[in-house]
Length: 130
Image 1 (cartoon, rainbow, N blue to C red):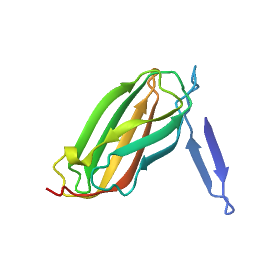
Image 2 (image 1 turned 90 degrees about the horizontal axis):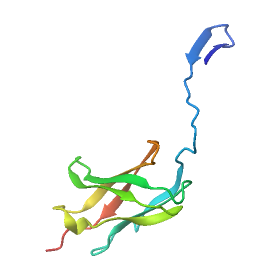
Image 3 (image 1 turned 180 degrees about the horizontal axis):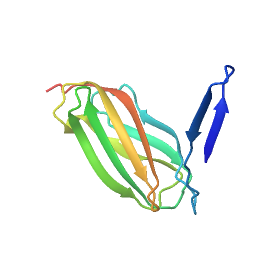
């Protein structure tokens, strides 16, 4: 659909909007959080989220990177018959060579129809005390 409008000085503007009507429900993710924040030594980061497709399979990809962009964690998997609220995704900072500080996590969820939802955030992690 194309929309044409004019401002107060009679300057025209035009924009086109494209949309797709889905045959089924579209993946909607809400209330996503990473906890605890900050982490203390020995704790894992957990990601909790809610979605509207309870009982359906969801593919996920969880990545964690330091502030320089170095990838610390990259895991793909499937949540089979995913409940509407999930907190099964975790990351242990001791599993990567990492001196501590802030990291960026990124979670992409994809339903069986190919609809995806991308989320990201920051979390503070302790360094290895070895």
